[in-house]
Length: 129
Image (cartoon, rainbow, N blue to C red):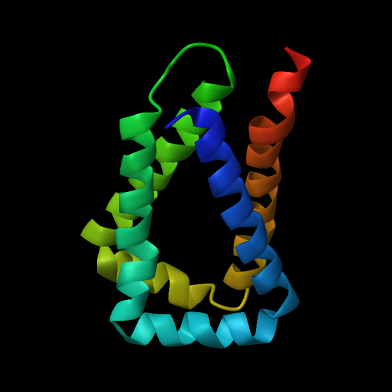
């Protein structure tokens, strides 16, 4: 898997999910509260970032000064966040529950910024080389 393919795929997923959350903030807040109460929060919050972060590091792990470095950093951060959430479940749930009202908006905002950067890397950056 090339870093361009990963950036395109992860960028599209990130933008679509972020826009969905942004346009449905009240529903997203309710879903976030429900996720804290059952196992779906553990899977969505911890296991999926570990899976996607580790996959990105397995396939794209270049440290040269190019766009692949940014994609590698995104993968490493995703993996680190997922590992934190899986190992320190109680602390993660406490942090989330304290800021549950702001989290959907911030998640959508950062996801949108992340997605736009990855879409730029995936679709436009190579055309300027």
